[in-house]
Image (cartoon, rainbow, N blue to C red; front, side):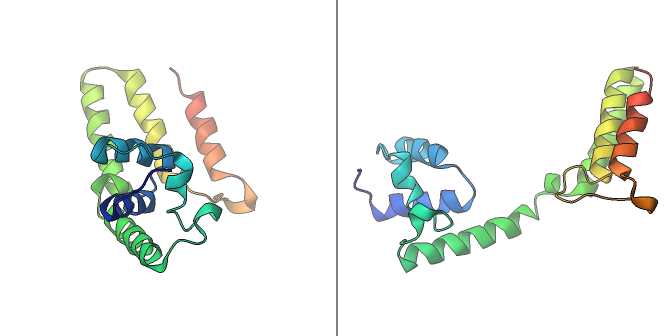
Length: 146
């Protein structure tokens, strides 16, 4: 096992709190500090995993604070907002239509339908009578001429 400095430990904890995988973190530590750290050693700095259950309070607090800040800052990133993505898709669709690139326009329309139909959310959206709204949108898009 590699001996880690305080700076390297802090780097590992913060990277894991930002949802980087142990493999990504190990590679970043090698690049940043020149230290070869095995993935299982990196995993010990993640208190959400079984291997990190005995992480000292100092690092656990840093992990929790970093994760909270990361989630809050992610909400401020424009591309993370549905309205921003739909606006950009509208702009791209208009440009593709001017170029007479109809297959691309159809792809963008399908993507927009997925965005507004909650295709990327962990719950099902049902219409009246229990029918799947998302499935109806997909069926409609599939019937469009290519």
